[in-house]
Image 1 (cartoon, helix red, strand yellow):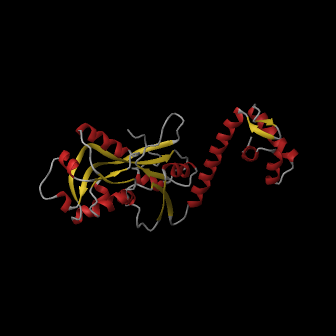
Image 2 (cartoon, helix red, strand yellow):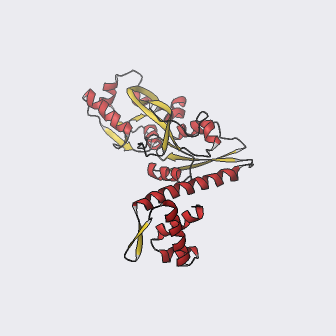
Length: 295
């Protein structure tokens, strides 16, 4: 068994027919069939069963295909890593949840920004899109505030990078000069909230339920940047981590009205255990490019 056999096997599994796969591979159907039989003999199991005019994977075939894909990803990883050897500039490919705080992203990447030997490639998208890119080795790390599902078969390694408090933040005119208790702020002021499907919103809804309050909602957004802009426009008090509006707080454009005790926003780095990890990621994650399970 060798990589050549596995590549031919993957081609047949993808096409579903010997004829189509042989045409794409520029091989005779008999030669391709012989190679597949050699692989099956080496593994001791039939990999396909015929259904009508097509071929479908057996249970052993599905297992073999999963392992074959893993082998090819490792080979691609090796090639990509070795191509970087000796280059004056190294690349770190980072995926970030589209709704994640830009200030946090810059804080995380700060040690690499501006270095003459480093190119930082940033991609944004949904959690599912980014995890597919990570699994396909198109990304080195995914920055998110959503912990991916993890079980014994999960490939993800999750490291908590930071945990930020959540506050009610608004313009000085809205917050006023005199301090008001949290319950009064929520009862008296319109609020700018994360959308209901977010963990932050779920925690806030639990808080107002405990307090017995029914707040007025001025706006909802799933994007931290939009929450920030709505707060700047004085649409209401925003439920937001102060790091998102760090510059506005420093300039006095926005001020913190109250801290929401017990509610925190976690920032996570999701990576894969790789045989050839990107050393730049190791620098950012404290010497390990694979990370560790989040608590």
